[in-house]
Image (cartoon, rainbow, N blue to C red; front, side):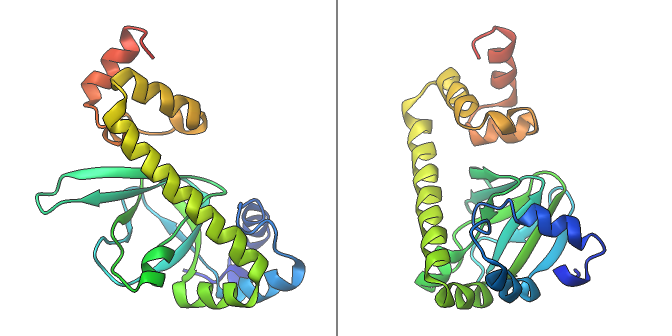
Length: 202
């Protein structure tokens, strides 16, 4: 888990991180402050980054690959709340602010490379830079709104409508997600998803 400045691909990784929607606005001085706090981590497919109910919290900037945010009940039934890919983030910021355990898990859907730092370090950085904090917190509100809209969609739209909405909102992910992951996100069986495709309904 090398720090960014010690990573063998540091130049490329810096350029990739500059495309992140949160980090884009950073000026040279802010970047110099943040960079020593970042570790670059490669996660294998299926790896667990954060575990539902725990207190260990970190901030992730996705460089390559896809993460999912997922909740599960005591019986092990899972619901995927969102996917996040390159230039996006995942975070436990809200739980950190509320001083509660993280209410979901974060898991790698594919191989993932991400820059991460501890939540105390990230919050400390934000407190020094009000404009970046504003951008970040606005992104968190959008993220939470997206999760709420998805949950409502599962109740209001039929199977074909759920798939069509996903294709409209996340066309860039449609061909990259395993069928079983997409089906779980849409609360469908993989067989139903395949049948909809086969019959030309999506």
